[in-house]
Amino acid sequence: MDNGHIVQFYEGEPHLFERVGDFITSGLREDGAALLIATPEHRDGIEARLLTAGLDIAAATTGGRYRALDARETLARFMVDGWPDPRRFTEVVGGLIREARTHSGDRRVLAFGEMVALLWSEGKREAALRLEHLWNELARHEPFSVYCAYSLASFDEATYAKPFADIAQAHGWVIPGESYAITDIDRRNRVIAALQQKATALEAESRQRAVLEAALRSKIDELAQIDRRKDEFLAMLGHELRNPLAPVTTALQIMRLHAGDQARVGRSREIIERQIEHMTRLIDHLLDVSRITRGKIELRRQAVALSAIVERAVETARPLIDARGHRLTLDLPAEPVTLLADAARLEQVLGNLLNNAAKYTDVGGRIRVTARAAGQELTVSVEDNGPGLSPELRAHVFELFMQGPQIRARARGGLGIGLTLVRRMVELHGGTVEARSDGPGTGAEFIIRMPLGTAEASAAGAVAKMPGAPANGPRRRILVVDDNVDAADALSELLRDYGHDVSTAHDGLVAIEHARLHRPEIVLLDISLPNMDGYEVARSLRNEVGLSEAVLVAVTGYGEERHRRLAREAGFDRHLTKPVDVRKLEELLELPL
Image 1 (cartoon, rainbow, N blue to C red):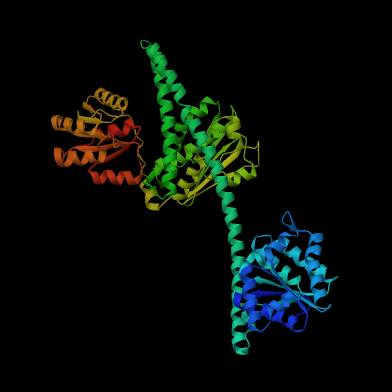
Image 2: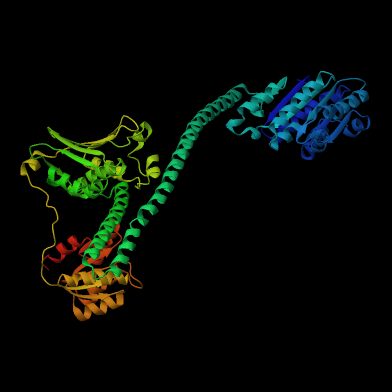
């Protein structure tokens, strides 16, 4: 063991002191020479072992056959820019070995070098391996044996397997940790078996970690792509919400300048109504995506005629279709088709597809809606001769915030959520939707397949009622409460135009006082109020003012199920989201109290 280049891997320092001490002792007892190049702590431990073995360290030192050096100081003498310089190494270490041979009468020289372990512990692993090779090169010219040592704790990561093997390869003799040195065969075999089990487990863990790292990288890439889409979505959202404000502002200015010109005022009013309807639809889409993602959408299924759904969807998309000069063709079954579905949601689905086709098809394009019923399955297709879809876009077109490159280039808007809503709504009905296109410039087709529903529902033939114009109802005492003065005053004025007795308040305390005086039959109450929120006001109206028979209606921008539940718990009877649909409001006001 004391010839050539030896490496010791140790688990504890006492074992290191013992083995290195025995190595040096063997040389000194045979009148050879020894070099101890170690850290001060390890030098003291090894020399204590030499003294225990009965060596006269002082005499060996005086005779030049033993020399102890500081590993860090010696290392510094031949390192250049963090790398061992071959020439300086030969001068420094080779000089020490030649001097030791002179004092030992040209007998063998044994050296312990801890410099490689220092480099390794500092993270300079390539430099440590290079230094090992320099020891080997020096041994070709100077006869000596060198003993190196590394703590096994320095190789506690799976990534160290390769450098560990390289270090072992650089030595002529490898001594494993002290667990392997157990003399009792049975005990040693048990330790070896346990170590083998740990090695196998570590290999499996390493493989699993590699799989997890690959999955993590994939997820990071996916999240980065989603984040990019989100940023694009937010930018487009700002664009889409600001766009309607420009014509609204202009229309209001026209109405101020031409208040006496009823024709111009009427046209301006229609512009404002269309733009508000557009903004409301955008906001509703956003809320729908949130609800669907969290599983909060509940379908209101009823027997409804397919023709009625198509009619309402076409009515919604007709302004854009006509504005862009498209030709719309409907190819529906000759016989009436009734299905069990949520009429409003299917109108939304078909309306989204028609709006997309109208928006992205060049002016004067063709749009075709085809429907077929076979057995208990309904197939509806919306086809256009627009720009088409690339294979990549077709594969991801239903994903949230997904937008094709043509959207921004053509400046036609869109939030990248409409098709996501289409897919989710169709799936809630138990159906599927797919996108077809032969590529850019070939048009696109979206095909919906869904069940018609039960035979009983089809036989019933009932058709969902479409909301019509508000009817004249009874005169009501109404209290409108909203801290947005314009919103409260405008709604109050509209209700007065419908013949109701209306009072207005802009905070909770004033609302309570109005309620005490006027005893309203209906309270249209905003939730986000200063000082007292709408929930507190509602509880006060019920419990303190005694409006037990009044209808309390939450009128708010919060439309989530959580907010509806809080409203019910606070004593509200109804819940309307802003902006209030006048038709829904009129229907509510017509209900018997």
